[in-house]
Image (tube, rainbow, N blue to C red):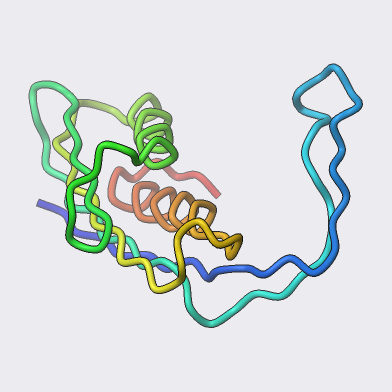
Length: 124
């Protein structure tokens, strides 16, 4: 079993502009400025070879059925991996969830970084 841990900080947006006029989703989003904070999300992944892909996500020690962002990151990473894996994900969130401090983004980034290393995807 391979275990990898990664951290991503939270972020507080100071100013921003919503950019949703374009039809192309690649041109939509937002731009702005803010500050990165010391606290954030630490994610530990435990990866083991398997006969089919399976994963479990815990947030602060609790199994959750509402980890849609993490589940999408897992699906994308597994689609690039060679073989099949059982993956356990443990997010330790040290910032308020749902308060606009980037907990979803920090969770997604820390998970992507950990999976990249654990699955040896070679992404940069």
